[in-house]
Image 1 (cartoon, rainbow, N blue to C red):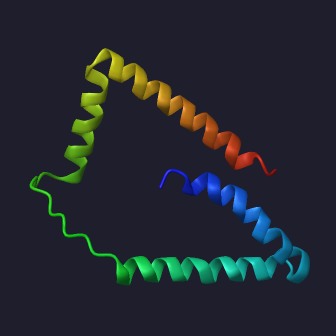
Image 2 (cartoon, rainbow, N blue to C red):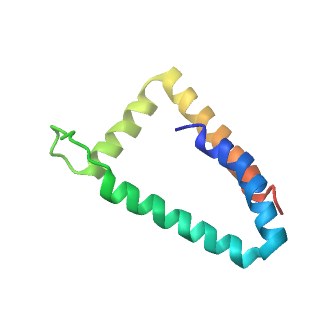
Image 3 (cartoon, rainbow, N blue to C red):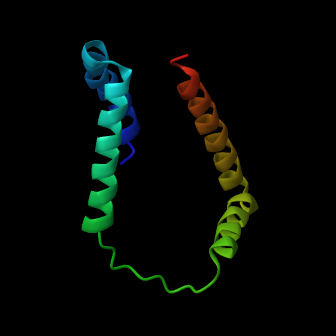
Length: 99
């Protein structure tokens, strides 16, 4: 799953470039819409998850507890902050790379 972004960033221009060259940007957007509809329908109709969690707390409480645990331990806090900065910086560069 973690390779989906880099693979898409590599394969997308290889497939999208010729489509834009031949039929234009609007055709590429229609291809993207069609592919997205296929993905949404296949996940909506074809995926079933049998896991049922035992905790009945609210999702906000569980999310807050997980963040609280991350900041209690020294090494884990440092790792959490380092990964946050790493991925935030990577996403900012990746978002504006094409501009």
